[in-house]
Image (cartoon, rainbow, N blue to C red; front, side, top):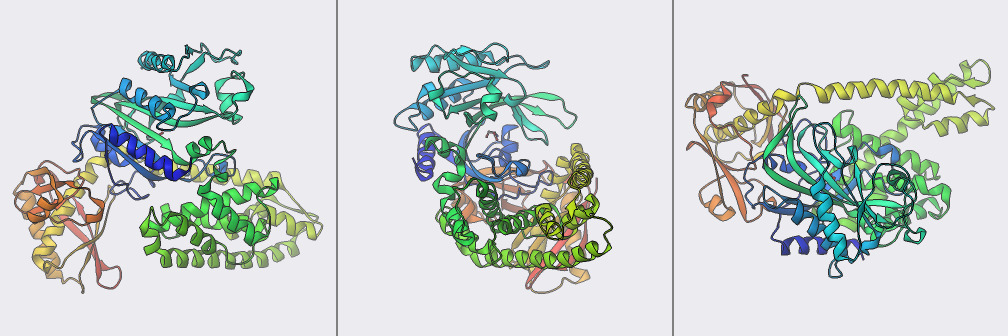
Length: 608
Ligand code: SER
């Protein structure tokens, strides 16, 4: 089965079960400063698990592009990826465990759908911890499912190596069977489904976790029973509604279905790998080429999609991740002996592979190619400078060993791979203090990790409330701008952090001080009037007819949410918003500037 068919079947299956397909979102979360990337299909649905009504109803599904950087060092093995696509389905306070597990089993095993052999399937469930009991309900439902396939499924007791009993199908695990975003919010126990890639070996022998580590078992689906909300102080609160969040990694599942050793051997990567083989004149089947080729293939997909989603290489946040990905491609390219232009050549292949599913790739092709070329060029220049610096270090060198600090300096400042440093040093009969290098690197990583943790831990508590206020303020600002500057004003971008809102809009010239003051006055007047904010679900047609501003029409399905602020503003929007404008207290514009021809940017704050 090809990925194309899996996509189609997944959509068809869940539509048949009454789910609506919702559009996927960007890799960069909108209006959520607490996370850098969309890491799971459920992420944009946060408010709906907590009780907000979704315009498309209670049963949803989609295919969402995701990016996770936590596993970047594992990329190169058989299954880890930074960029991947997730097949997801959700119940928002509708059906719960029984239906979810039944449907999972049906989709995986029924001949009409994936037709996997039930004898090759295993399920894990939540074991128990001091707050939450074992998920006995899921165990019971799994037993019923396996029974349908003639298997007397038993729960494996304890965590010792499994002594060959093929009925052991259900494994209670602890931390692997609890799922939620690291930033908190909706979460709950989960049940994961695993596929046996090597059934010829007979019943499982080692511990369940070992069988996963050694690549015999691969996780293909995760059903999360989201009935809790993790508060910023860590306390778990029972939600008013019980939700289901399922996610199936497209690449892993397709590799399992095709009985391939790794995701890189499926059609999702074959064209890119072929191109790398051509540029390097080396073969993927040679063991030593596999890791670098896989890293390049993964990173180029991630880079192309990040640029499609408007990220450009930089030294901060998402842009920094993109920069690292691109530089890693160039470094690993050199390891394979590729000196000529690499990233844009590979990007052309990714774009051609994915443009039918993601038409934006074709539209933004030029930009993607040019950003990649620029960054690759920049890095190559640093590489040249680094080589000169290297010569200087060698001149100063006393003895025959390059210190770990120097090697790390070359690595950190000039992006010099340690392997390259070693190679050049060897030509001069000089060795490199590898241990010293690793110590310096580790010290540096610890420092930057601490920095990152601090950044993410920084008072999440008050953050979401503040961003909601700024979101409502953005709507007020938008309408006020139209009143003062005219109806040609169109939103070009919006970004909210807990500190400020940022709003980009089309307008040919700098705003005068007078205009800025008037806009502020209108927004403050509307705050003073304490207008109610109301939401109505309506068809896109009706929304447009009512005069609501609708910015991203192609993103909306037939039903949309329209937010009304008194009679002042009407806008199609996903929310969330405050209940009454009075909550904003006061509004102030702190900056008005140009961000390109015909586009102005306003930064503004509200009082706490
Ligand atoms: N959110 C869950 C996961 O990422 C299920 O989709 O595994």
